[in-house]
Length: 253
Image (cartoon, rainbow, N blue to C red; front, side, top):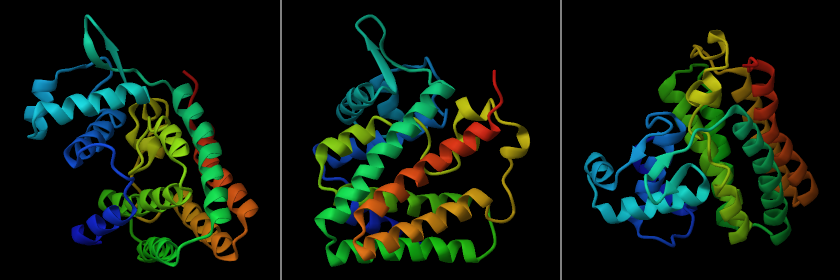
């Protein structure tokens, strides 16, 4: 997918901004750097250094750090300032379980409210794009990120369609693991407890992604039928599938 197409989708489905665009961009980038371990646990986050790294002023950095603190990804103390919080395997599992309930509610609510034609068309297109990617029969880091970008936009579109700001804010508190790739490989906390064979990049689409795509298609069908109860059940099971998979491959430590 071209970069311009991704940008257009993000603009169409982006969460209504309560902060400046620069702050939102910095927030997303810092969050991804933390959950993928590019910024290690217990690292002290200095606004000046981060501003230089991301080539922005200190103002959006400070605003983003405040949000990340509220989300629980960083800790704040008067003496140390902001530091990256250590995320445990239990934290990740708990986060997925809570997210499943919240996204299930969002799916049901969006279906109950009724879909605007444009929004349903966008979701349909996202699902079709995902199927087209998998139909190539190839897999790589680049293709994985491409598919997970569509996955993120699909889930975000449903959340926004629920028109529930409290629900959106609560869901943000569960973003403690990567959303643009396989958590078993990209989340340091999980990867440290997963056998190497489960962290290797396959040459063809992995089974869990193929299953996730089928679940997206089932969800879309429920939305088209305006079956809100089925939508809630399918979405809850869809998100919990990640927890079940991780539980099966994570070795106790």
